[in-house]
Image (tube, rainbow, N blue to C red; front, side):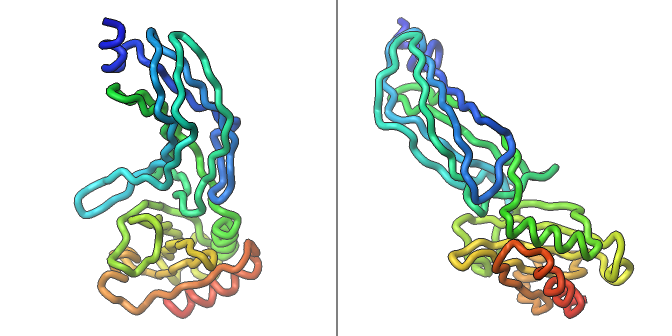
Length: 245
């Protein structure tokens, strides 16, 4: 009877991921310790796996998205009530969404057990922007623009070359400085590729950058960000906003 129950998840092995911090930076790595605890019977574990997940908005509503996924171990046997620990390093891809009030990211850890309910563990993490993207945010702040909202949205056609089927859009509004009273909103979409970071910029478009670009609107521009120097990025952003406003 115990064997039958373990196959439906009752008395089955469990897994827990322990991170040294709940805050990570996109493009960097974080160490992790995986705790696997045996259930009421011995079980064969085919693998321990991870998935870095978020969700994005599409025309059909919100959808789950896997930013990255990977396998930790080869098959092993866990005895009844046995405890095993594995140390690993989790790489956080550059394109992982930055967490905000409206954007969440989680690490899901699971056990691949044949003929059994998949026991898992979910850990929400705070994701900070890459150093280059942070420099863009700092440059916008220096220009008097503050982050108003952000969202992950399905990509518009083939306009963006990304490994995912969504991008994250950030909306900034002027609070002070040159653009206060001149523009309503500045929207940016960061796209990471082999050459680094490209930032798409749009100004004063109520329909949103993705919608406008889908309609082949030409009033947008893009900047290649070569390094994390906000002082060098600031005048380029200012000029782009002036030209688009």
